[in-house]
Image 1 (spheres, each protein chain N blue to C red):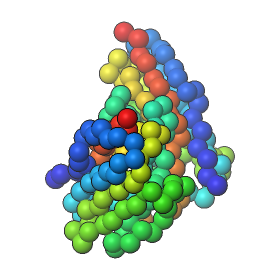
Image 2 (cartoon, each protein chain N blue to C red):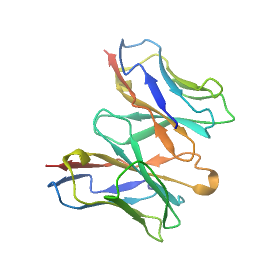
Image 3 (cartoon, helix red, strand yellow):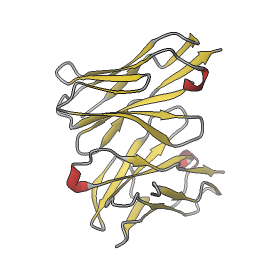
Image 4 (tube, chains in turn green, brown):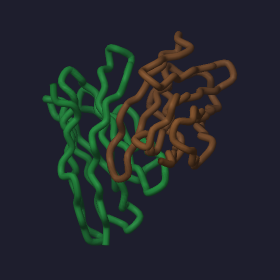
Amino acid sequence: DAGVTQSPTHLIKTRGQQVTLRCSPKSGHDTVSWYQQALGQGPQFIFQYYEEEERQRGNFPDRFSGHQFPNYSSELNVNALLLGDSALYLCASSQRDRGHRGYTFGSGTRLTVV
Amino acid sequence: KQEVTQIPAALSVPEGENLVLNCSFTDSAIYNLQWFRQDPGKGLTSLLLIQSSQREQTSGRLNASLDKSSGRSTLYIAASQPGDSATYLCAVYDDKIIFGKGTRLHILP
């Protein structure tokens, strides 16, 4: 049973560019959440998607946007990249009707903005 | 606003010792609490999930406790091994997961 799959694993972008990160949730999970983890910090909540809609959002600017597809996979888009966007981006999936009893995390995408 | 604090930020202990990692949270209205392990540059590995109705969970050498009323959780690691070296993250669930900054653990051979 595949867990959460994220792609790509590593990415280098130039300041001002746009980036798209992808996440496939664990089988049976219908909710996807995205987190940003800067070096030496705990993960920070970006947003959560369920039924193809953004349900909750953390304290991140509108440059961060997302999408969920009918197969529950999700994308995170970041526009006008800043050096400070360099971080590990983690995707977590869960099953909503179980009250989110346990999140499964992917291995992350390491984004470097130069 | 929920805040999660982990103490200590870093810890080095000789192999074989038992140790305790601490986590505190400001709002006791949580659903669950989960402990994760993170190796350098890697994703998160779930260690233990404690549901709000539970007081502790055990897996092998690991034991996690939860006291919602006092806003505290501890992760106990018995007979530590060099392979336990990693960052340990505490996360609480309200309507999303809120993480602490982690405790960087180094087990000395």
